[in-house]
Image 1: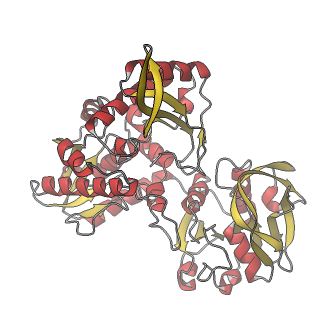
Image 2 (image 1 turned 180 degrees about the vertical axis):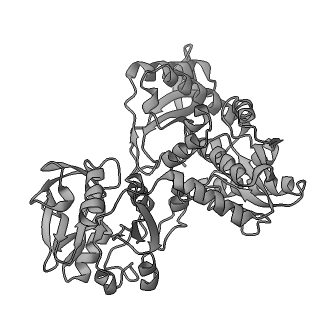
Image 3 (image 1 turned 90 degrees about the vertical axis):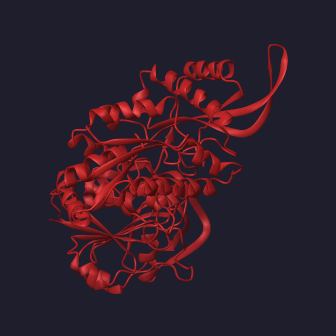
Amino acid sequence: MNNIVILDCGSQFTQLIARRIRELKVHSEILPWDAPMERIRSASPSGVVISGGPMSVSDEGAPTVSSMLFELGVPVLGVCYGMQLVTKLFGGDVTSGKSREYGRTRISVKEDSSLFSGTSGSFEVWMSHGDHIDRLAPGFRCVAETANGVPAAMANPEKRIWGLQFHPEVVHTAFGTEILSNFLFTVCGCSPDWDLGNWIDIMTEEIRRKVGTDRVICGLSGGVDSSVAAVLTARAIGDRLECIFVDNGLLRLNEAEQVLDQYRALNLKVRYVDATDIFLGALAGVSDPERKRKIIGERFVRVFEAEAEKIRGAKWLLQGTLYPDVIESGHKGKNASVIKSHHNVGGLPEDMKLLVLEPLRDLFKDEVRTTGRMLGIPEEIVARQPFPGPGLAVRCLGEITRERLDTLRRADAIFREELAKWEGHSTVWQSFVALLPVRTVGVMGDSRTYSEAAVLRAVESHDGMTADWVRIPWEILDRTSRRICNEVHGINRVALDVTSKPPATIEWE
């Protein structure tokens, strides 16, 4: 089986590169940038990708790679920071901060290159860099550039080294899949011999090996992630899986009842725990989003631990953690930036009594959906929109109260109801209402109001790592706004979020 080694220099997109490669049915493996050469050799790479990263190549302690990497005899592709690092290592000049480029940028291909076969002469790519290359290293040619004259791609076929200043792995880069495909199949000579079916079998055996004869508690949320994790684990250990559904008081309207009905169809043993008072009591007076996440993460674990004491032999806590959770929490690769602490990653307390089982932590959302379908999970669960682990706590900005949560629930239900009537609703990756701790003046029935503002958020995405706002028809937005203001006490203004990711995240907190 072919294998592409990705050296992680701390980019938020590192795992996305791996996922794109796996989509093309080539196995990929992520190693830290400072992995020993013996470890890289033992992976038997067919090619190496040096990822992007948040640092400048001129920063003290910035990631670098051994010169022996380029003596392995396999192709090397530097992406963003990786291209700048290659340039520096081979004697070129990299300048910091003079020509920052973020988001969509048009590039022009200057000459034929094996990487750009099948692309057009000019197309849009996704940039995310503050440094740029002033002078390429000797022996390297500029094969594409931006309108600003900044090298967008370089090549040294003799040394089998290529570089891309943009991110081919994100969906907003035109021909990104073709470029990666060219690298895998034309440059590296790989064969498409890997798929998720193999991963399911491997992970099933891994769960059996890791758990042994112990019992596992699964924190079911109703979402696709925990559901797939539960069915996969049940496949491995059978009735030694005990599922617990915790109502933390931060769910959407009527969600608890709907979720329990769905799990009956999966024949999973589910224990219902109403912990609303525990969670809302702990969150009283808390406005900081990081504190919210950590409080919720700790309370989840404590509730599970209390339930585990009632189950003889329970030693593991199963969670549906995905890789976007891990990398945004800064737990994958050195120099990775913490975007926000996810309740089941950055929010876990250090003195946990249960061991954590996370079989999905190297997968992205669409891969989890595919895995769920392969496991026979009903489409109504598999196709469900992502819902954050902290629930409405990160959509109810500012202090959390029962009254504000109820206001948010009603507004959110209206938005989802109106979107469901739209024939294009299947294009929406995630949609919700955020309640802002901002009061605005309004007028209702000839009387002055001073109520909070709500924001509608709907995005389209392939994997959650990048996203763009959905162009919802105006009549739906108009109807949603009027219904919220008329039917939901406590809101007198509705706004629309038209920000992509990056620079924003999908959730507001």
